[in-house]
Length: 230
Image 1: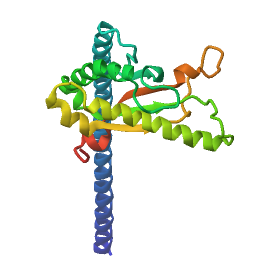
Image 2: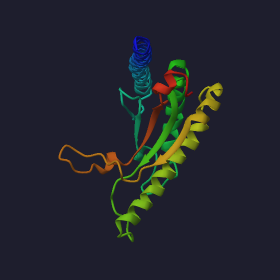
Image 3: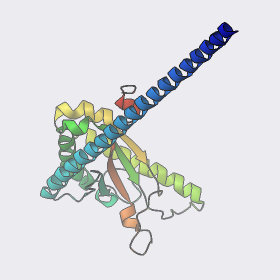
Image 4: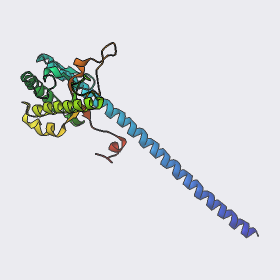
């Protein structure tokens, strides 16, 4: 009887040891996971801050060079994005660059491309350079349906973006930057989706008609931090 009790007690002790071991293992794994998560988030924040700092530095350089050349392009100091009035590039309802528009891009392109690609820190963090065309919402004769108006302006804004991209690619920037610029550049037409409003909340048609050159930073996630995504 005593032997059976000792055997039964030993089995209970063995079971307790198993569950204690499993509990310790799960706790250890949880601690490791939390530690790695904190490290990843800290690294993510540092990377984001670094990317923002580099973009602001480049935006400042671009803005300074454009001002020296008296080029009418608004630079966002936080993102480095450029806004160019369509009137500086195109005639009304046209996607063909006018002579003044070509002269404008002749001065703008070398400044923009050389400034960006001379900064390895920035290039390493850029996913793409997006040329975005925008229109106002003014109706065209013969198009009474809002969807027809939208599609017409989508086509116009896309063609304008493509005209700018094609001309910039042939610009007089440093030849060694051509391949990198060609791989990064892309175009997009937004029609009248992103109108600019005045102080009264009404559409500013002149400012809404524009071409933007935007920098898209490369995606950087926890998977990237652990080397699971490049």
